[in-house]
Length: 76
Image (cartoon, rainbow, N blue to C red; front, side):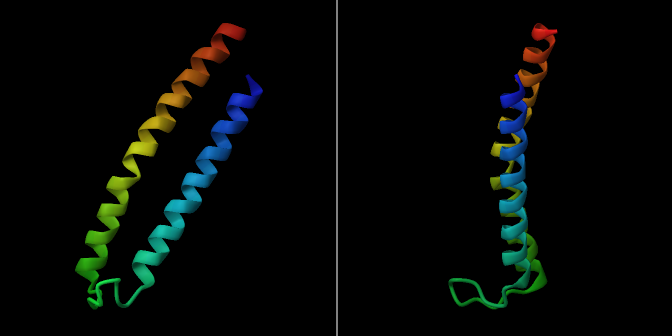
């Protein structure tokens, strides 16, 4: 049981770090890979795309959390 929770926290920390690095990369770049100058509107659009990409791992983490809670109740 304890391994499940430790794994869940490690996975969450990794996802948070990846999201933070992606956010910093989006907001600090002046020009993107297509050589387009990044305006605040384009940066916001890129950030929204990043958010959409991280919704799927978020759903998996929530399901994993529910499984961990149910498994913890059966042990007690």
